[in-house]
Image 1: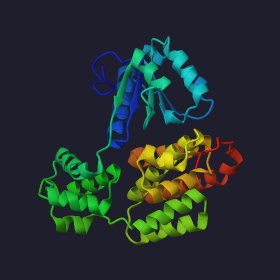
Image 2 (image 1 turned 30 degrees about the horizontal axis):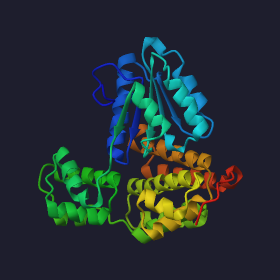
Image 3 (image 1 turned 90 degrees about the vertical axis):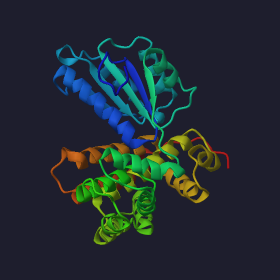
Image 4 (image 1 turned 90 degrees about the horizontal axis):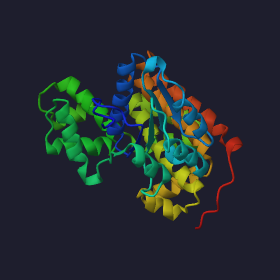
Length: 341
């Protein structure tokens, strides 16, 4: 079966790849729900963020007997951050996976020659979800609106993308807002002007740059300025998440010894953002950025209903934890391969 169908026997392993965040999130949500439904409990779900040396812990969880005779789901995000030794541990496990476990590995991208991809293919499935290209975002937005029962024409979809940017989670949140306001009525340009937040790009860049550099005063100053201007905490959170997702990928590539030019080509970045991300990545080791990504994943879940706190407070708490982690990044730094200019 696929991780999404939820009808037949689960595969021993899945590799879920791609930068289409809503589809990846949906696949994981269905997989968790399947395990909880079949076993009647969430105790059979173990979740990890890949970090140096924790592959053995992941395998230990997979080899732990499932509760009440169900299937144990071991979910690991960010597996592109694992080094060769960690991947070898997982490859060895996949040669004879536990009969009552499902190992789900999640990454934005892995080469076709990667050992994890090859090993998962031998016993399970690789699922890939690729985000729309730049010229496809308007149609993607219209398709998402249609699924919500929202009438959105091509011109209005283009206006929405221009206003919000090419960020799927942000677009979905704004579509939800429009759907709550309009119901099934046709969305007009006036509706978008009235309801959709115009992201203040300069201040947002100031926020994420200050946050990545660990400048506390500048970070909270930019955050307060944006919220005072009417920016929604949930949308600001997704901008922060998007920046650190890209930064985490650059950290991993830099650890592998790739130059700034090679990173720019690999991630299809423009020269200026490539230079900025590459410079910021120099302050982090994979373990440090993995810790930050775990904070962001936890806040994402809390903002989607796992917390009763106001979104702005959740955002501020998350920002504070990130700043604390950035401040300690120097203590976690490791020697990196020398990248060719």
